[in-house]
Amino acid sequence: MAEQSFGLVVDFRAKTDKELLEITAARDVRAEKAFAEFYQRHIRYMYFICKRDYANTLGEDGAEDLVQDTFVRAYEKAHTFSDDGITEPDKLALRTHGWLRRIAANLFQDMLRRETSVPTQPLAPEHEEQLADTPSADDDQEPPESAQMKLIKEALSKLSEREQDIVRTVYQWYEKDKKLPSHVIDDLTEKHKTTPENIRKILSRARKKIEEFINAQGTNRAT
Amino acid sequence: MNKSEKPTEPDKPTSDAALERFNALSIDEKLQQTMQSLHWIAKLDDETLAADEAAFNQAKATIALPESLKSADAIFSKVKQRGDAALPIHDEIGKQMARAARDGGKLTSDVEERMKRDRQDAEHKHNKSKGYEDLFN
Image 1 (tube, rainbow over the protein chains, first blue to last red):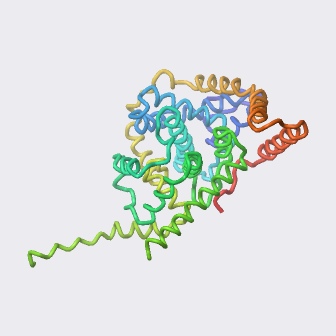
Image 2: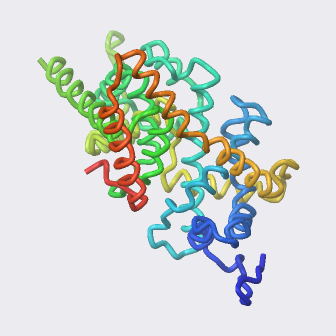
């Protein structure tokens, strides 16, 4: 997709995902053309993934809506994309797909929260068992449950609904040794109608509660 | 083998190694893996993404996009709709303040002014953020 801009021909096809998203974020006359190229580059992948992972729950139409909403968020949050300095095209595609899928995963959880009772209540033990029994494509790759993981599950189930939602959203974006995109806090601030500072406090408090629970229970069970 | 003896469990080096790996993780990594195991969050590590990329490449030729997804125009329409819907935010703030005044007692004008100022400061600081923040260290 080539575009004439200020007398120069801009070939968006030659741009990297990061460059396209930077132009999109600038919101100038080229923004929509740049994003349209980004969209065409990744739409088939996102449709494939959302249909495979979410159509069972959302239906075909719901999965299509999820794909659209993911790209809406990608457009709005284009400035937050980081390619981590990756230049190799294959690895860059993985990075972009990871970013889009994290957006989709959080939107999916939000849809569930709005439309069903899951997970608007803290998880009860029987619900945890039910979830643990739910088959998934990568079940055989999951680590076996250690005593520590059981404790963490127990600790998570004791958090309030709001704490669970904040912890879940933030850890969907967690990548070791990397910072959190600030739009995650923006979105939580908007969703929970509070301040960014309060979201950070709730997260920190929830994390502390979990650590304290693990330490206390671990000590109790060892004695 | 004596009939009363139970056969010994075969060694499970893979499971043991996985347990050891889990126990050696940081609290943040443990939390993330636990939530993945609960299906609270999607597993999106490099291995998973690479495997899905391969699956997609195999299926790519057979994927037919529905009409609604063929062009980005629907995305731009939705972006515009969301932008329009967000405009009356100041009215909403006013309503929330009015509700706080009703439920929590009367707010004096200087308190109300301070609340507005605090909010503006917070929004300003927030807008200055570089797009990333360090919450885990």
